[in-house]
Amino acid sequence: MRPEYIKLDTDKPTYIRKDRLNAIANIDMTVFDCDGVLLDVRRSYNKAVAKTTIMIIDAFTGTMLPDTLFDGALNFKYKITGGFNSDWAHTYAYIMRILVEAGPEGLKEINRMATESLKFQKPSDRFNFIKGKLDIPIKLDGLYEKLEQFASRLDSTGIESVNRELLETVGTGVTETINFRGEVGESMLSTLFEELFGGKKLFTETFGLLPSFVEVENGIVGEEEIVILESTIDLFEELYGAPRFGIASGSMANTARHALGDILYRFPEQSQIWHDVVDAAMDELGKQGLHKPNKFPLMKAAESYRPIKQGLYVGDTMADYYTAKNAGSEFIFAGVYECVHVAEAAMNAFLDRGSDIVAPTVNDLPMIILYAREQQ
Image: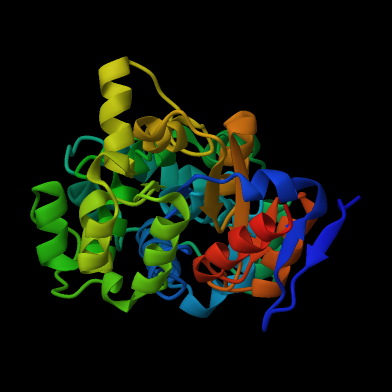
């Protein structure tokens, strides 16, 4: 049952939980997710997920899937589970479920070839060894519905839930060859994804490697658009009396820097917690699993602003919602929905989960905080 909401008189639906008015009025710092909040990534990341999936499925089976299979509505089914904040994990889920359609005999051949490819260390060498050797048809008819149904069986544990469902069926030869958990340069999936996403120059700048899968000068990242306005950042500074805001994101620092440009300099550097920052922290601490929805990136981004009266975390996915919940009462959550492919469904999902604020974009949030303060 949804809590009671106040619907504000705005152009697009904006909601505040009635029982959170006081907490919203007390907000004195904000941490933002990046993709879908500061940036509109609907065209870029979704295209990278589709292209990476298509290329790996083609290599393993010889079947070329259409990119229209992976539309926004299907992507949302996976995002709403809360377990696929990482687009690498999202891609892995697609690959694993599609390979099931190869059937037992087809998977036996795929695993045989995949296991043989492990004699090569470089993921691109494994990819090229496998590609073109197998002809295992994947039927397109009904595949979309099967991918939808698979999403309904997954949860906030992400790839762990994928492996619980499918690892035994698909086989370890495939998963060892893909090497999902390996670094860029070691993992077939993440390396191909980042080459497609960043393009040659940005990929090399970010990872210190030359592309080995594809030669594209301009990556898909060029299709991203900045959402947050300079005037919005000014308003947040006025509300808090200082630049008391940060970023907790699953994006790579260098790719985000490329997409956000000069506006990133408005965010204090010590409060920018990116995917690679969390990776470094995991290495230093000897811990795994610190990426969202773990609270670690959010708490790290907020560290320099303590004491905090009331923190706000802004996100566009259920993983972001769970990140705020995992942080406890120190943070409340604002779900923004306009940069999600199925905006109305995202809005309703945030309301159904009892999000504290539900708004079209990050640019609506200063007005909401002002409204709450005026009600005190």
